[in-house]
Image (cartoon, rainbow, N blue to C red; front, side, top):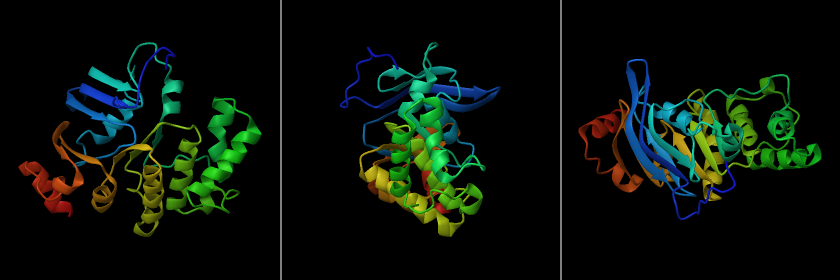
Length: 252
């Protein structure tokens, strides 16, 4: 991020404008546009293969776009000389697979990026890591290795690891999809806590009850297009598009 970018909280923190992305002949995103305001919780839902996860990865510059614009705090994400490390300090991302280092403890996993990537003071990072592990309700598990933790606990360590970079926005990509039902709740409670504290969150999720409870706005995508969107109160009870209604009838 350049220092002379002027962004104020009354502007969208994420602005997506006519974004398209194809893998070969397969169009995954087609002219997608929407804004996310600071502190907002946005859920993106839709059938598998509808471009949801690709969109999150484009926001974090993990995947290049073919056309359009994505801005985070006023900075064009796909500008040629973008500092991707600076972007990823602002935009944390948690994936379906936890990707923890198996030979590192929970505490060490949380500390790694601030110490080794950002070169922050180790003692200060350790203090923050203890606080973050407490924040995700894993106090007492600091010395546990990933293999000693349940899937849900590992996912919460992954969330703490992402928070250790002090992001302004958190992206969650189907982070409960690989979990047993009994471990899902702890992860969702963690996200709920973050949202309550004012963290801007964008979630790709199949947890409709959770989306209804937590989201300020829901976007339904199908074949790379935003078919319908709205606040949960109207989205779930008064969907207009037949594709939305069919999707909701299958999962609710």
